[in-house]
Image (cartoon, rainbow, N blue to C red; front, top):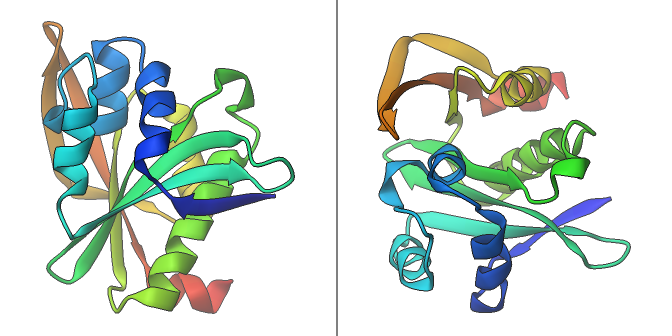
Length: 168
């Protein structure tokens, strides 16, 4: 089982050490961060009261499995910075469980019901994970990012929380 815990200062170094290069950082954190990731960058982004960050822990032993965040804006919630730290743990359903816990957190604690996230088009594993949970690609919204001279396209995915809760 996994659980979400408040992401705190003591968790920073583990996150910083898990981001190995500029491409990994863009994939994880988007354009707000510059490589190498630093504590002051994390402090700055978490000083935004509309952002909630979590350490994802293995509830059986307390080990950190990953990181995830929710950003609340207008009437929607945006999931982001979803990372499974140990690459050997990817593709085993942990991401799906993380997203479900984030959706449950929003449903139980907030009023927002329109949920979205962005995922790079080449990250097929993550797209499939989000689709399994119930997200669908929003064809009307794409973001273009330049990373090390390459052009990356981020797809926007959406989910209505009321509909999702009714199905589950």
